[in-house]
Amino acid sequence: MVDIILLPFGSAGDVYPFIGLGKELVNRGYSVVALTSGYYREPLMRAGIELVDVFSEEKYRALIGHPDTWEPGLKSLRKAIGAAEEVLPPQYEYLTLRKDDDVLIISGAFCFAARIAQEKHEMKNITMQTSPAYINSVQKPPLISGLYMPDWMPMWARRLQYSIVGRFADKLFQGINDFREKCNLEPVKKVGTHWANSPLMTVGLFPSWFCPPADDWDKFVHLADFPTYDDPKISYKSDVVDAFIKKTRPLGKPIIFCPGSAVMNDPSFFRSAVDACIQLNKPGILVTNFEDQIPSNLPVNVIHVRYIPFSKVLEQVETMVHHGGIGTVASCFSSATSQVIIPSAYDQFDNGRRVEQLGVGRVLGKKQVSGNSLASTIKEVYEDSSFQKKCQQIQKKMLAYDEGLKTVCDLVLSKV
Image 1 (tube, one colour):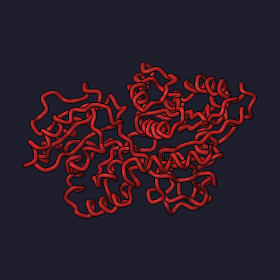
Image 2 (cartoon, one colour):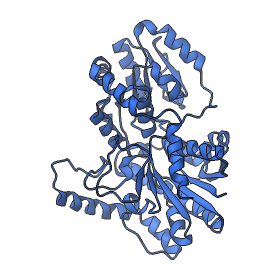
Image 3 (cartoon, helix red, strand yellow):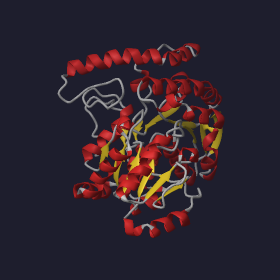
Image 4 (cartoon, helix red, strand yellow):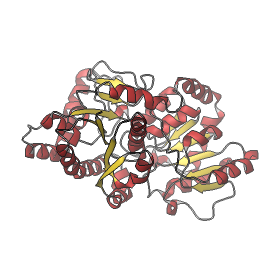
């Protein structure tokens, strides 16, 4: 039986879909190894997946702790590319050692070793893209930094802008072509938006109702569904959360505030969250693993927890305020929870735009965030009944928990 090699990299929203897929593959009898950061050692172990640590936990914490990592535009892109270049050699070295084995590589965004091994050693590789933002299209361009393509813009202007931005982006990805040269491979263009996607198969981990395929997508792109996955064995203070929800029930359902699993330097987000809860007289649950961001002396209607399994808690909340990560977006869809999205970088702006277009949430610019603006935006989405109606309609489109993973698994195994 073929062995499966996973190449995920990034925050929990990028890595956990791979862990969920790996667990499903292990359950089906496959041997699975992940070439990623040691930061994810424990959830990988619980899923029965072997870890090859190519980016230490210390390096990962330094990366997510750097303010540039979450700065919109060039700063965050340079940090992401720098990390991708750092994991490239150890990932490629491992893949080269396995080039004569019967293996299938499943790689994520910015894991370019898989594409190089695919070309150099003719290894089977499938790319999984968690978000539409990483699939190239001029007809239906994603909302990302450096591109401004409103619907009224003519196609020739869009192509020209893509060409200019693409040439600049390829300069940022020069390190990838330098590595290709060492492997005696020709340089490539459109590194991040086209070449990174495997021609054997690229799987979009989202349904067509979230992002209808564009006519100019590569023909090897196939859409699956949201692979919602919570680590079932990770501990969280369920008794504390349940008691808090019960205690504050006279104030209504709570609001969850989570700026993202990897964000560790945004205390202003939580200060604004507390202020909004006070103004609204609503219960609030602040979620972060980095508790030094939490204000001291929280009011009685606000608590802090390090982790919450969204699949178990979101149906009990009013609204969720978050960064716009695709995994959190999908979790809110599954529980019919309205959303307020405050994007920082990467695919979050595009995800937020799609949430607004579906009528299930609002986007608030990071520079606009204050207690007042947050309170008024939250109030809008839970008082306007149209939001809840749309949330319930979207929930009906979502597959049952774990079913999304099974559809992805079936699609991937079609190439074994």
